[in-house]
Length: 207
Image 1 (cartoon, rainbow, N blue to C red):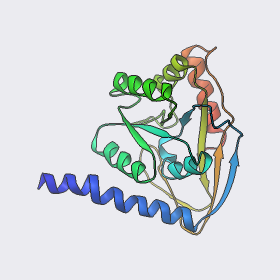
Image 2 (cartoon, rainbow, N blue to C red; image 1 turned 180 degrees about the vertical axis):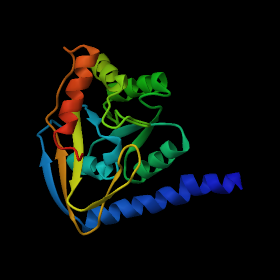
Image 3 (cartoon, rainbow, N blue to C red; image 1 turned 90 degrees about the horizontal axis):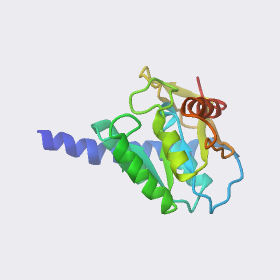
């Protein structure tokens, strides 16, 4: 019974969910608000946990030939997210901003040095919502990598009552996709850097 449940969670559910994401994306009118970034610059991609659903396709449109891996937690919810992202062309890095942080940090550093963008949800996997964990600051500083914030703002949507107020755009609606100008936190102390990242990420975020 347990193996059947695991099969559903890691195979069936992610396959079904990625089809839903693609359907929403394809049936929506899309407005793109992208900063200009060199294709040769490796980036840290910052996204809010509750705004995660459409971000793999937002990234794929922003960097059509880009390579990216997202840091995901190793609990069952994280495994589902990892598989959905893989279907949508985004790899996974095990770990999270809170648990498995050292493992995630080491793997993220390795990927950035290899020229792969690294995506992070700084308030994941458990919140609080719109909080910034230390990991994104540490990774940015250690690799001298700039950060961009990705947001997806649908006009019509469902919003779950989860801690992250997870947003699901409704099909056949309008979605505004944003990619911020790259920014650095190299000259800031930890608390200052976290507040600066939060300010940047909240500019186009849904409340």
